[in-house]
Amino acid sequence: MNQPVLTVKGLRAGYGRAEVLHGIDLQAPKGSVITVIGPNGAGKSTFLNALMGVLPAQGQIEFEGQPINVLSLEERVMLGIALVPEKRELFGSMSVEDNLVLGAFRQVRLNNPKWRDQLDVVYQLFPRLQERCKQASGTLSGGERQMLAVGRAMMSRPTLLMLDEPSLGLAPLVVKEIFRTIDALRQTGVTTLLVEQNARAALETADYGYVLEMGEIALSGPAKDLATDPRVIDTYLGAARKKNTGGDGAPTHFSSQKTGTSSE
Ligand SMILES: Nc1ncnc2c1ncn2[C@@H]1O[C@H](COP(=O)(O)OP(=O)(O)OP(=O)(O)O)[C@@H](O)[C@H]1O
Image 1: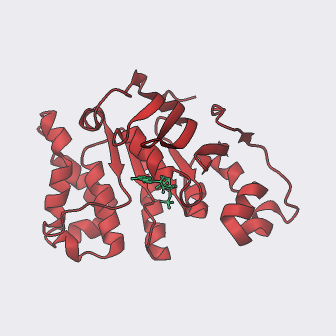
Image 2: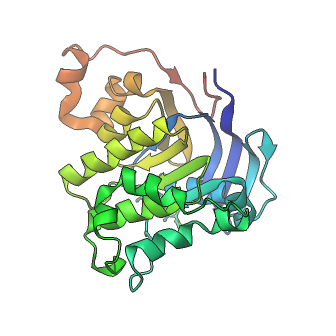
Image 3: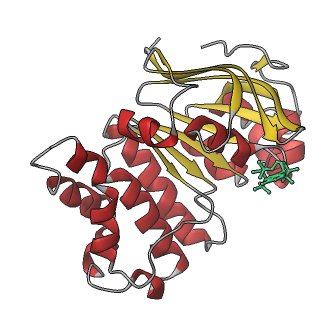
């Protein structure tokens, strides 16, 4: 197995006295796409915010073998962790390229004289952004804004890229494009943690998946196994059941767990 970029053990987090995450275990091997799917309110965004240091959390979070629980948000960014939040938080009056350049601050702070080269990488991933590089980001379409948010995170050359619902509110064709890009990111060696309600697209793209329900990991396993698991199909994939199981609904093997450790 690849050395994990991210190891989470017994993570608990919430708001004030209300605990939302009740002990999450997760691993993300280097260069993998890991997805966390689950219903509204399960705690998916809370999980990403806790990993990023936006929210305090208890338990263990290790990034490349180093405990990061006590590190600030900024320190985590400097280590190579990037989050694209559900609210994209772009600077609407600034151009596409200026938004991208802002994303490079980590590389600038690291005195990387070649930080601008990353613009070419981002433009290769999203040619549409290059075509619109001078356009104010506030005038972009929803899909283009999403591309820009991912592109801006990529400008920091992250080791771990966390995406909160990248397909939210996008038309099916744009969703396909976004997921094609997530697939392409894998080739660049980036590890991606993808939180999604679009379980079908997420499981098609990811290597490994976790199902988060009411703040606990209800199921986990290789994404292709989860995609054919009757419980996942019934709850998250709807009409795909017959097609994916050959119609018999037979259970597939996966590691079922309640806050257990990943079997990777
Ligand atoms: N700032 C906050 N203060 C208090 N409670 C919050 C806050 N943000 C989220 N919550 C609560 O925490 C729980 C988990 O919310 P979270 O946004 O993490 O879920 P989610 O799985 O990302 O949902 P969705 O798919 O709808 O975005 C919900 O019950 C929500 O109401």
